[in-house]
Length: 333
View (spheres, helix red, strand yellow):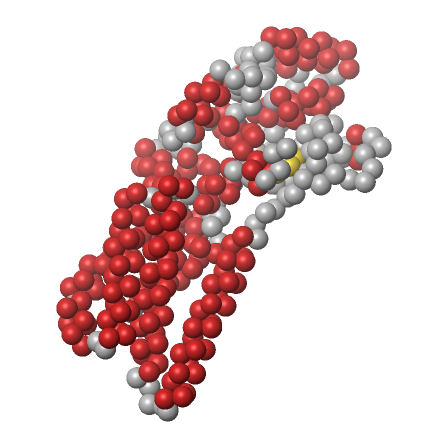
């Protein structure tokens, strides 16, 4: 019973709140581990339960066992897009089995036939309402929506965080309100562990050579800083130099950091895949959403990397929400 409760709670949490948090990672691992233990535990006494059950109870155990079997398959295949139908089957079978078993327990309570039927109908209605509410909460994560103001800003002072912002005169912002660790922008090779084709295309793309590994751009910024100073060049950095701008390195003359790896990082994978776009007014109207658990993916520890990849393999929804924003699919035009 405790294992079933753990599976029910963690399963509901994973469905309703899939986000890049420690709780999500823990829930994925606990759900998979408890599922394996439940299969081993209940499998030992299934024959006895089957003999002692009524037809409705047997149907419940059959559905629950089938859902558990599908769950074991999903631990191997993962729940990436090709296996989403299997995940849905797993959810439907297990919820249906638990509902039937719960109804069987209700019917064993001493009460009139009509009262038992009423309780069964109420339980079914509650399951439907909970499922509808859970789905509504799950889908309500859209976050930022591209929306232009009625009037454009009258000056740079009204863009982004204004003159007091850490990245002024760029309109760009971060979800932390401050700087972001540099390896967030310089570890694109880590993405290549799973996205080999995309990483290979990026390696020779204009995005890769958007910063000071592009000599035309380098000379333009050096001349600009010689003429008007360092701060105005941050206006360009919002789109060309995230690894310098969002780490504070662009507060210094580019000649002082030109040989640093960050100056040659270009637009790394997460630069585009972690932004929430506010408007299409130009000049970097977006927010970098930094998920702290990104450090798991970029860890030098092979075990930590394997743990990250395993969790993403089992349930990629949190990874998808962190790096595949709605604007990339729904508002790409």
